[in-house]
Length: 390
Ligand code: NAD
Image (tube, rainbow, N blue to C red; front, side, top):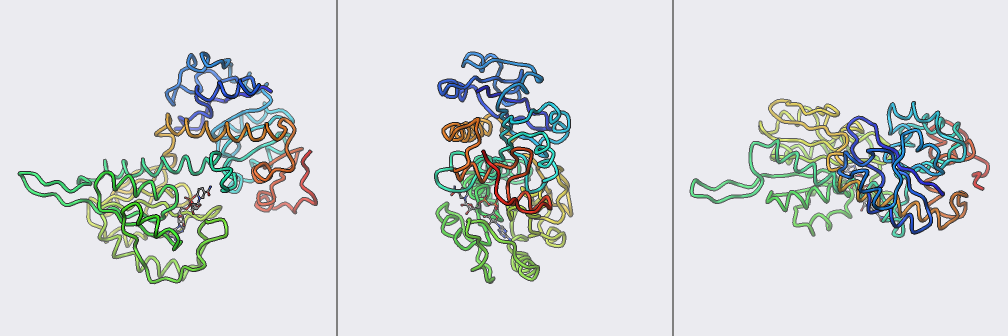
């Protein structure tokens, strides 16, 4: 089977789906590996490095003759490139990548029309045996680290306490909102930089994890026993809950030098945790890094993709932090996607495996149809009588 890696062309995207070190194991498993010219350059990997591991460097057009195409971004997540590339895709080709299936089901319908088998890596189930395929975790982890560095460099103070002959400097107060994968790494990074760190999450189970990193868990007088879904994610709460939450968080936020926002609800707009009024009550020079910017933001005053100054507070609204650390995020992504690919190969790829949970949960389109029940629902399509998987 021929496997090809496409060069990402989404604005600002510097990651690549395979790194040179991931080529040899695939070849050993009997696959032929093709890499589009310069695909890895922005992430720090030259064509020569891929070649010396046994890959063949090909043109953009030649990528589309492979049986399986590996991407970081495809379908709606690839932006304008999807418009241009989808006409080159062939029936029964397998495409694997991040594709925003729940946010943009229209592009999935287009993928179905092309006849491709589209696998969405965002939909990898969060079960123990799929942990090494979990791109959301691998990328969010590094993004959490990077968010703290952005905050530290925008802050007109240092993070650690420092005692010098010229006087003692107090540590900066960092508050992390949402302590999932990104939030926990943000806490650990801010601690390593010497800040005084506290964190809040709507899921009570997180308290112990926050404390084990040496941070303080902010307790709010809110009823949160039903805030976690069976999958371990936060559930959307009603507006009365969020209003009370903002009221209770106001004082903690006003007292913080840095707020790192990471709160998300799967498949929904991010909850508003910081209003413009709350921003106006923060000290001038404080910094908010809103990692939820692309999903509407946790802070009302965030401008998506921009850094702004509102009432003396710097608000950073990054949209693709993993791309800023592309060498390491590509290395981890490559491990995720190769483990996923080998899993499918072990289960019969290029035939689409029909009896495997990981395949079933990630397969978005097959045989000309959207086959994923949640994506069908988002696309306004009725459930399939029986998911067609041969
Ligand atoms: P996420 O990106 O969906 O959300 C980030 C955090 O925001 C979550 O911790 C969530 O509880 C929190 N949040 C949502 N609404 C909030 C609000 N109003 N106020 C404060 N916080 C709010 O989550 P994630 O980082 O992808 O992780 C979700 C869960 O999945 C975690 O329990 C994590 O440990 C678990 N997980 C499991 C595996 C696995 O078993 N393989 C892998 C990764 C993550």
